[in-house]
Amino acid sequence: MNSDKRIENVTIFFCWSVAAIATMGSLFFSEVMKFQPCVLCWYQRIAMYPLIVLFAIGFFQTAKSTIYFTLPIAVIGWVTALYHNLLHYEIIPESASPCQMGVSCSTVYINWFGIITIPMLSLIAFTMITIALVFLNRSVTNEK
Amino acid sequence: MKNKLIVIISSIVVLVGLFFIGSKLYKSSEKSRIIGLTSDNSKIFYPDYSPVYGNKDAKVIITEFLDPECESCRMFYPKVKELLKMYAGKVKLVVRYATFHQNSVHAIKVLEATRKQNKYWESLSLLFQYQPAWANHHNPQPLLVFSYLPEVGVDIERLKRDMQDPEIDKIIAQDMKDLKKLNVRGTPSFFVNGLPLENFGMGYLYEAVSKEIKKHYK
Image (tube, rainbow over all chains, first blue to last red; front, side, top):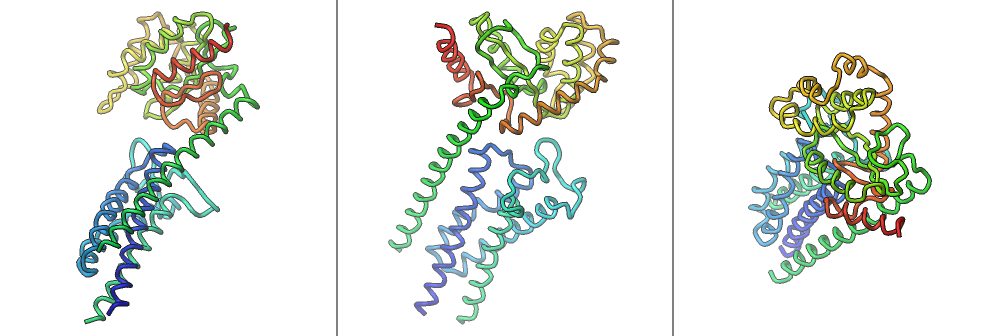
């Protein structure tokens, strides 16, 4: 029982850390490095930023209720990030994208080691959170 | 419960701290990178082809990246002119372009073509003056500029011909290339004798210019 509680705490803290680092990173890109976020980045930010608050509160609540509130948001963010990556890597043509004036969603700002771009970082963050929550959900359900 | 609170709060403190340290480091590394560019390439702040306002022999050079369609550039422009007047003979302005808006390229082509008629500075002021009309966000009418320019004596027929000059495209392309090199992501962006401003703002521009004036004119 005690070790289950431990897994819950660690998982939720892990999710919170991912959300917090992703938020800080995205703010660093836009406010310090002055990269202008495109429309799709904003949608992903809308999903990511509240997760910090939700996971922080969830840390003090039951795992089950935390999953209920956060998993849908994480999935929405993940789908947006996936779509953004498909655009970014030109799997979906740019003309089909919702971006108009300002910054194009296929603008490449950073490219570390040839694969890590900003949309990729976002997808990685949402994937980590989603997978962690799904696993947590399983272990909580199995308990009963 | 209490332990959890400590964990969360200390994590926040660490992350926020890292954020600020990171931004300090980034800013200082950017600054030294740009200073490096100044020493091995003065052309980037003063290309041969760029329009220059003021005494050609002035020792203080303000390089401004501007976009005729940008509202902040419009607001800054009269103040930059004032600054140039204040230090007449000692400061010159070099205009480079950024094409951050929908009709920027069109407006820049118009401006560059007015140089052939020696009407550049009048035309630039005029485009800024009427910017709310021709560059209206909801209903941009870039062709309106042709109806304003005769006010300062520009021959529109000739202008339309001169706008086709492929040299103008080259200028725009070169400016955009250098802009990327300098990490200019907004307009107006100023460099005073190749140094970026401490921060964005007219006050910082005045400060940077007076510092350079003191250095070069004792």
